[in-house]
Image (cartoon, rainbow, N blue to C red; front, side):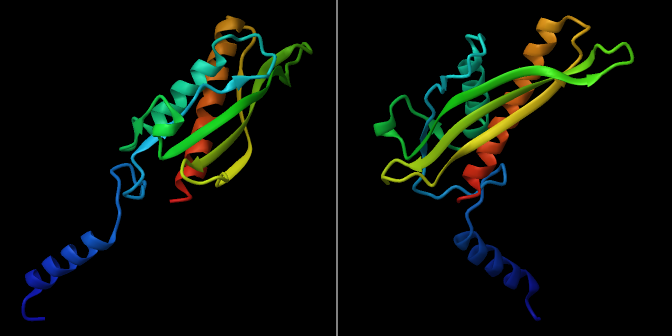
Length: 168
């Protein structure tokens, strides 16, 4: 090769025109700019009034704060719609200690969600997701359960994000 710098420059220009790249490693199609994420209905019977808010914050963090997508407040303005329902919530003993008391409890949250392009009638996917996290019920159980619920919601949000961007 007589002109390695020239070949490198040509390669960069050609590759740059062919590839789509996002700074988070996510390749979002050029025509996809906006996303609508309504608050998921809570049909879990958990008694936690802020569960939809907490899930929404986790989803917005993934889809808006970690990509170039802009959040819109109406489905008619969106390129993508991510919608769903919180279908289940449970907190049960997970590990029993020597005195036959729960050493760890596990929070389990279930969500049914769909992901679709707004211009298309059918969802790309519509399926269930589950997130779990453990906590020590002997140390401030209400706070620890809330923290475990947040971690379970973060795991659900990550799985929703991964399944969604895997389609691009």
